[in-house]
Length: 218
Image 1 (cartoon, rainbow, N blue to C red):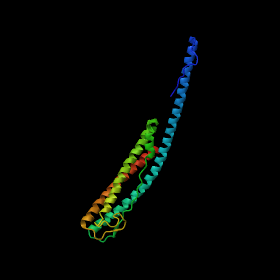
Image 2 (cartoon, one colour):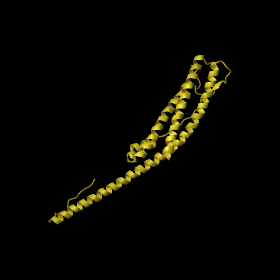
Image 3 (spheres, helix red, strand yellow):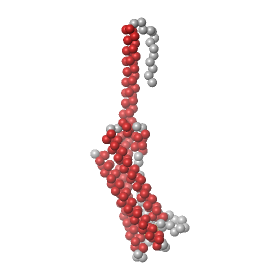
Image 4 (cartoon, rainbow, N blue to C red):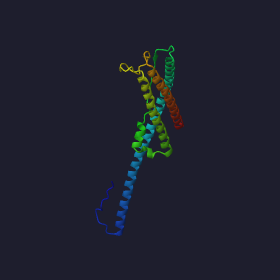
């Protein structure tokens, strides 16, 4: 807030009055300039910190994505093997005695994006930069939401092994198949097929996100 103080002595001539007015105007311009300089430095600091945090978070998220894609590949092989086991079991063929439900997933993070949005840093960025980060985090959100579908698939498939007694873990790798009723086997087959379809969808989304990362890196 700027304060303007009255003169200590009254102006007796037009010259004194004009000097006083000029002094006030110059003082106001200096104060406004200093205030704008401080505000500009503050905005530059916010923008620089946001860009630094966003690039670091994006780099970390790309590393997480690479690990997730490797885990999805392993999950695809595992559930493909499970499906073959179940199909053989349904046909009353000799099959291995268990299924596997090992899985791992790490969501991409968005705390730097939320901070940049809440502090107004996005409005200070060049349009192309803000649009680029928006595309990255938008695709990350899609991938994270689809991963929730994939994880739900695994739990639903594993729960098909429950025997009604609620004993043991339905997702425990090596769960025995002996004693399963035909309806349970059918449910396992259907759920495993859905899991494989959702894994394929999630892998496609991950590839798309990795492509966006690659374009942003250039």
